[in-house]
Image 1 (cartoon, protein in one colour):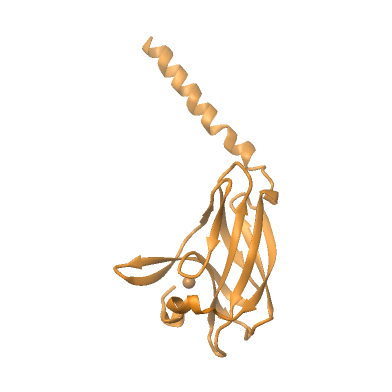
Image 2 (cartoon, helix red, strand yellow; image 1 turned 45 degrees about the horizontal axis):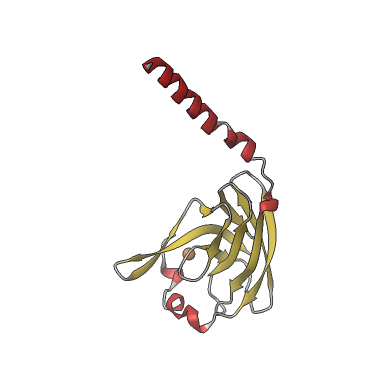
Length: 165
Ligand SMILES: [Cu+2]
């Protein structure tokens, strides 16, 4: 009886690990990027942030693992955390995009950090950003540069250039 139960349990484990390989074939068609933009920063500022919403209509959880852009020497995925009332940002390896859900990259939350800008970015400019997902697929988007809105004041009070990345 005990042996049978063990075998059954083993089968369950095997079944649970199997779909992983097939699910990774799920096309990036499950993912769509909306409302992407890069925040305009004062001339001379060497870093800025990119925001967007990544929607996942698929049945598998996905992850954003990398971002690239020709306008910056370094591009990192970041999160903001509230550390005893002080907003801090830190680099993260990945950003989850839940099945049937979405990842919101927005002010005060996850964002893409553009570090060591190679050129000045002003409102209306288009910044190409290439996103890489956990299955190795990529998606190239064009993010327009926009002026920060009033609701982003919290972020503006933080001096990104002085932060250690
Ligand atoms: Cu950041």
